Length: 288
Image (cartoon, rainbow, N blue to C red):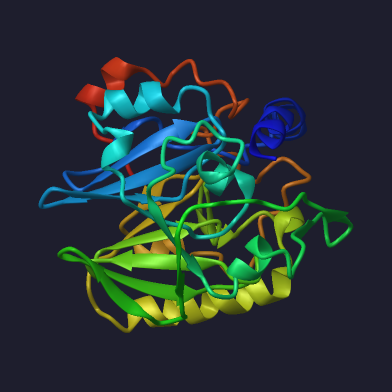
């Protein structure tokens, strides 16, 4: 499913979202000394490095250039033993699916116990306001099922999982070392701050808004700096920016207002994602 779905998205979604300012993925590179990312068309996958351990967060498309871009960041796929999965959409698990290149076949994946119901085929993923069912995802890796609020460690890395249903029923975000929140498809950053993610791709927009309200309350109660890192629209270290409009939804069927000058006309055009920039420049945050 992943290869077919990836090819479909590079054509259909490129045309659908062209010029609307919906996606502005980070290019391949490092956010700081701990967090690196790879751009795969409009999506990002992330890596968290600490004391010799590298954890991967999501697995992108079934992407032909993944090995090449891993090399840009000096990451050997055989060293990835742990993959945190926010949700099972093919632009987040493509490199784990059965028909992928198998770069991470030996890795253990961590997925929410609710989200796992998609993988066991108990539940079918629906988009376009429930009118369209996506193909099932098949992943053969060893799995660890994660509960809402669960705190666990991979070596000396602390991970807290927080359930944020809406985009999918079992979507998790991961707070790593109390500092980095990997938000997947929970938040969409526009030019003027964060919104609930794309309207047509949610299982329930109403539930997604409720989840964001709980997440904001949770994070603000901690009174500690947190970097919020999204799957498609960059990162921010400002909670005010990240939650500026999260009682509203990003309506992806129309051009975004205000238009974000940082959003490419066609997010699937990767000409500006280069090895030289990946090795020499830190990735700027999305704040105004």
